[in-house]
Amino acid sequence: MILPLLLASCVTSRRVNLMQEPGQRGIPSYADTLTYEDYQVRVGDRLYVYVYSIDERVSKMFNPTGTGINSSQIRQSSSAGGSYDLYTYLVLEDGTIDFPMVGRVPARGMTTREIKHVLEQELSTYVSGYGDYQMLSVEVNIVRRSFSVISDKGSGTFTIPKEKVTIYEALAMAGDIGDFGDRSKVRIVRETEGETQVKMFDVRSKDIINSEFYYIEPNDVIYIQRIKGQSFGVNSVTTTISVAATTLAFGGFVYGLVVRIINAADTSGKNN
Image: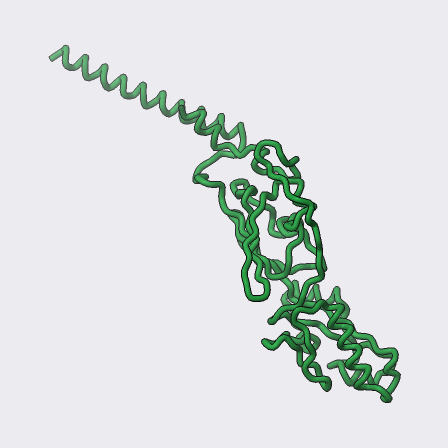
């Protein structure tokens, strides 16, 4: 009775392996709906904005210092906990950023490319007739982008290191899923404008690559629950056999001890 129970508690490869073919042993299939849209800026985001120009007077007019910081440095600073507030602008409640000399510039619901275009037009108009404004260029990046993972193996918040991050990369950054994490019911909690969505999927399915679940977004929360009813288990055949052998040996010892006590009691009764 004990041995089948222990075997049922084993974590099989079907439970933990990724990239499994859909339609086999309960692995679901997902429609080919892979689309990646540029992230739309939200209230509370921070934007790195730097104005480039061959005319130093124009550069000094809009930049805190005379030297810019490239995107890779910004990402490294963000992951290391550094701060470049002099170069970043908070998206305010009204959906704008307050840019020096220009004033409020719309940002919410726009991509960084769209914000870049708006800023270049605004700044070119502002400095018209002042310096070599025709060579003006603006760099816009979102900084301090992150996602969070809650799982049986541990929880944490991680910086998004590049423009696109897949669900596999996100899980790898978090140290993968624990042996008893339920890969069949991975949930992503995603905030959009005015609402919160919860998306659930089976990360073991190979179809994930072409589905809507493949890419994560900034501020996503990935939740992996434990396997239902899994409070005790063993994760290898060797461990199963070892536990079974130990249990049987202990049971045999208890049985032998009880038999000896009963025999001793019977002998004592007869002598009396």
